[in-house]
Length: 343
Image (cartoon, rainbow, N blue to C red; front, side, top):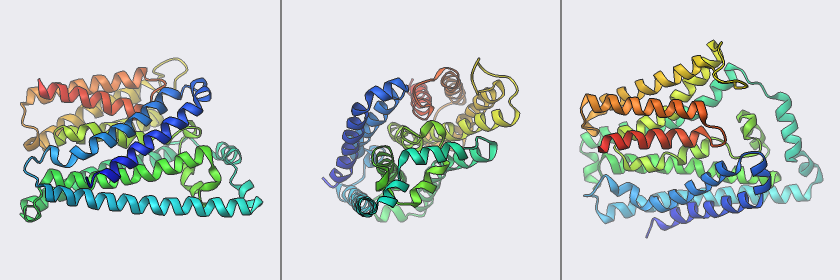
């Protein structure tokens, strides 16, 4: 039962996010945000439900004692994080309500005006935003590599663990930890901005204009990876790199070299579209080859997995409108690859 605190936290986030979306549904529907935010709420629910099965799914020999320790450490970490975040919010609420000047300074409409005034949509700014997303991939690959090394050295077996259980424990703990922080901050930003500390204003300077009145892209990006921890690791790794790396390639190439608009009244370009598709194919093919011990399939199947992922990525890039590509890209490309793997 040591998994309960983590599951309860994420189911609690589902409830809070769902209630927020329903209360603001009129505005959200008018701004084409309702479905996207509803999906984010459901992803929190999915994370809470699936969490108890993550560490042991690929590790059938994992003892209950070892599993309990993994759950316990993660739960303690999250409970401490939640306590710290609660103290920060309470402290800033108290000082804001006691000081009208601070309350006026932390007015969200004022922040939005300043943000729009200083907003710069250039290649340098986009690189900074994409770097944060690519950090997600770094976490996944770093902890997987660490787990592989420790497993090969025989260290993990002494703890009753293996590569999958240890690596996914670290990946989930760090990934969920960031999601917990982002969603607390976002719910406060969108409802009671004065609860956030002064440094939060600098933190939010790097978000997109389209995120001013909704959740930042980092939250759905991480949550959308959750179903694929049950797939072989190369599929999870490919999904993460497609969502961050291929999307970054499409965006940056489009901004730097894009000359031909993909569609009327669209900022997307043919050059960026092609770059994203090629990057997707290369990512899936190379990851499947490099990590072949965890994906024992033929080169022909790897080719078809790469092709399906590319087609689905391009469809999302060309036609997705009101649902974040940080949700659609991992879901469609991931399940597409997984389906080909299982056939």
